[in-house]
Every structure is written in structure tokens, then in C-alpha cells.
Image (cartoon, rainbow, N blue to C red; front, side, top):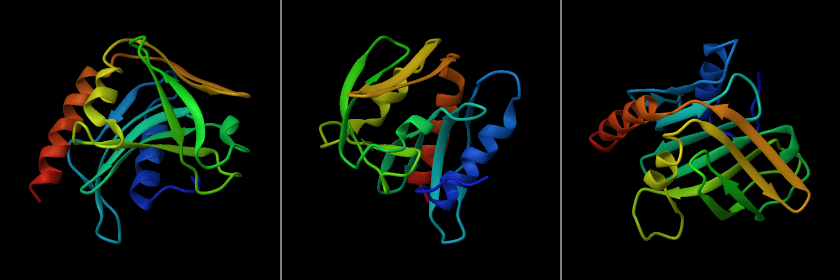
Length: 167
């Protein structure tokens, strides 16, 4: 299984998420940071058994909302889109891609409120209810779900982030 445009850690995390359930989408989170062969450590929260997927990957210095779907192929870096969360909240964002041909797009997240990116906690809070997540823009519409409530996996992510911050 290959996931172009993602780090080794994220690829392993997504592969683990995909192997969890063959029947329904469910959130997967690691309570401790995953470590890549280059030494980078990351905390993850992903949903899904197969694309389309939505997830969060957090490193010591940066974080992303990760979207994976065939419909993302053909859109360019910086594409303007709107995210619609299970909570009912919506947010305009720019999608970042390493290649137009990639099925992966990223949204920059921040762990510091007020930074020039979408706040990580504000995003994860939107997944604490059951519902569908979507990303849409001119000529694009991707739905992920229905997704279950992610409250427990988000708590696991928070535990992981504390360990990531301490070491």
C-alpha cells in the first residue's frame, strides 16, 4: 500500500488505521508518538478503512489535517475549499499538495491559538459527534463517513501530544 506525499510515520499510521476494521469506519489514535526511521516522532488520529480518509498528524514543530481521496487528484496546490465537520461547523481553507496527481491534500494546523493556521484543538473538537465530514470547492466534493464520535481517540491523541512535548 502506498500513500504518496506523506511522511513515513503518516504512511505507517494510515496503514494501521486501514487494517483496524473491515466493517465500519472507526477512529484510530496512538497513545504514544510513532517514530520514523529518520527519528521524527508524530501523534496521529485517523478515520477509515479505505479512502476517502480524514486524519490529523502532529509533529513537534507542525501539524496537518490530512485528506485522502481519489477526487483530490487533479486539484492544484493552494486550492480553495470548504471543510464541513460532523459538528455542523464549516471552515474555508487552502489545500496543500505535493503534486496535482496526488490523492492526498493537507491543511495546516497550529497548536497555538492565533497562529496563521487552523487551530488543532478547534478541529479535533469538531469530531466529537457522529456525522459526516466533507471537503468541497469548485468541481470538488468528497464525503468521509458517517464517522463515529471521536471523543475517546481524541483523549488518546492528547496523551500522545503530552509525551511528544516532553521528549
